[in-house]
Image (cartoon, rainbow, N blue to C red; front, side, top):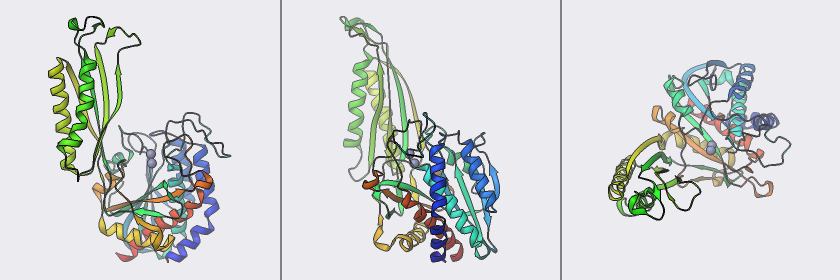
Length: 397
Ligand SMILES: [Zn+2]
Ligand SMILES: [Zn+2]
């Protein structure tokens, strides 16, 4: 059946590419994916899928649809995220973004198209499917503050689901390859936001002021000692400063306040807890030393993405049959984060990467860059992997 699915997908490759280019031209950022959701609903309805729920998080963005097979069985879910980024595209392409304020710079346009391609292929073998395939078209993967996956899980998108799979295009890996991993694959992402309050004054008389810039400097430097001195070198941990704001343009004014923020990336919950405790301690200590008041907001945004072993092994086998055993490798741990983790907290799942890097086409540049692009040659393979996984999982259960 995998061979058959591969053939069906291959035959509709042009359609999948056209869909991806359509979404690329019409990008919508997190929680604004209204037209994208409508287009997805239109295609799925034509394919004979049942729309289970449209609209999540108090919006009309996002969609869950079921394809009920001809035989009884479990429900397996496949997920694609649909949001673009608030970036202005710098590529000169016939299907370039028509919205100056948004761009598919992470390739979620390709995810949406690949999942529609998978739905089409599965639709053609529908009578033979033992169970139901649920399609999760997710809004807002890129929104740190309000995760689309979390909203979908809370609003019942995984009700009755036995297993879930999702993929991400990956420009750092060559087209025709797949990277997967059992266990942790992507990091948990926390954010910290601190406002330091001193007492402003004239730059020439610091003794009359309380200078929050010194405390800010102490905090920034000492946070790095948490990684180097408090956590085992065997445990991955990143603490980064993202913003540092204080004063205005004058060279002779000590500012009243300084704001700093940053991110923390970790895999082990114990390391995550230890890092948060240490960051709170370093900030409190530096402020006591520098006589500053402070307000700290520490947030755990996205949990770590942890792949289930059994689900991952089934997906890996399917990928090997699509691109060849030699082209499926284990990925290193990725310090980026991914809200697919919320689905995997609820049901066993797997998340993997498909290579879309092709230096000749310039698709090997970094994600989230105004010149990012996806190699369309990878799309049919990705669609076949998603469809193939759903088939394999259901037919083995
Ligand atoms: Zn991204
Ligand atoms: Zn992404």
